[in-house]
Image (cartoon, rainbow, N blue to C red):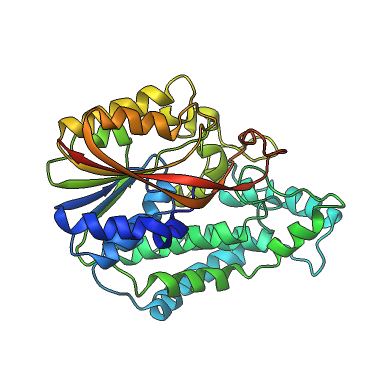
Length: 370
């Protein structure tokens, strides 16, 4: 995943400043971490709409784009934790000052007593300590029922879960209690989950949209067919041949509130339940981006596309997007430096072994209807 938060200060923010004011709505079709949707919603008097195939992304976006007033984080937390504490205490979660292989085995065995659809059964002893997993379940079960408090609390829960996850970067697989990895497992398991939720609430509470918009789960190509002239569309499509749902399934389950019985070291839900994108399949990715561009041109909307400036593991490269878009739009391009995650993909040619994150140039392509 390209670091759009970093790009906002490295060229993308300037592009948005130039283009947003001339449009009626801002539509983020692959919102991901929602950093671009948050940026636009906070700064401009324009309704922001954010979509993604994954629920957790829509949750993150909704916390900001769907409200136009701040909330009180202290009151929100106090009311929430009051409801959650009895549920947490009922779990009687085991804890340990020192995390070692024996305690990990104990934690996993303890978690097996709970329903297979529960977050505790799925993740306690793996991505989270028993205490952390029980807080996650208790807080998820007691999120406020009314907006905007519900959206803010749910986003804070996802943000804290991301920070605490005992995994190397993404939640594809948790650290295991081996001699080399146990120290990383211990660091993650000793994080104070409730403190991380409170920190996320404090971050979210003051930021809000200037004009209320909407966030939802949706397929980018289907949403594009509903757009109207005067819309400005932001497109940051997948670039990996591995489905993103493999890396974010834990956050997805927390956003949903439950999971089907999980399997494997990664504690994955069944494959058919994970969102699948045509953009993350080599056989369909090129056609998907071409179809999207054709639809946007037909709807007479403007667009900003960001994409790594090289051929990616899904077979798509920036030049292909630029050349195809230039046939049906007025197009201008700039290249900026960025850092992106390999998401399990192969190393770039000549860069040696695959690293988790790589420095690379990124294309920003600005498109206006002809």
